[in-house]
Length: 159
Image 1 (cartoon, one colour):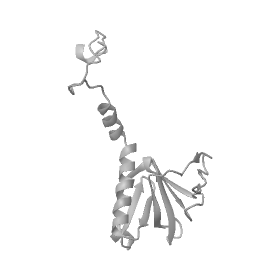
Image 2 (cartoon, one colour; image 1 turned 90 degrees about the horizontal axis):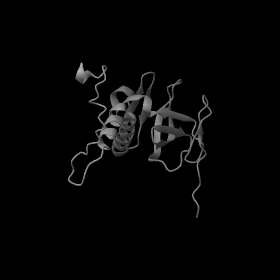
Image 3 (spheres, helix red, strand yellow; image 1 turned 45 degrees about the horizontal axis):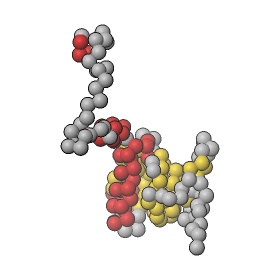
Image 4 (cartoon, helix red, strand yellow; image 1 turned 180 degrees about the vertical axis):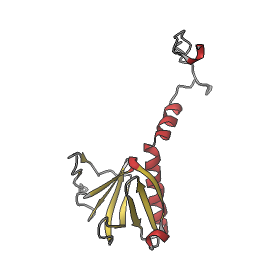
C-alpha cells in the first residue's frame, strides 16, 4: 500500500516550493491566529529548519515558520493562559502554540530547539571544528601549509 504524499508548501512571497514529506517531526497542535487571536487546530510538520502548518494532515501547508530566524522556543502557559503551551519567537513575531499533553509539548520544544540550534552560527562553527582531521590515535593532524606563519606584513603574528 503506497503512502499518500502531501503537496509541497509554496512560499507566497518567493514562489519557492518546499517538500514536506519525510519530516523530522509532525503532529497536531493548536496555534493562535496572528490577526484574530483565536485558537486554531493545525497539523504541524517540522522538516530541517522549517516548521510548516496545514489545516489537515495531507493538505498543502498554508504557513511556515523559518526556524533559522528564531531566537527562542520556550514554555508559555502563563502568557497564553493555556496548558501545555509554548512560544516560538523571531525578531518580529511570537507564535503561541499548545499541545494536547505535557509530553507532546516537551517533545515539540526539544525538536524545535534542536532545529534552531542546527541553523545557528555557533553550531555551524562547532561542526566545522569537529570535522577537522584526526589520526588513528585521536590526535589532530597538522594540515600546516605555512600560510599562518607566512612573512606577510598583514599577518598579526609578525607585526
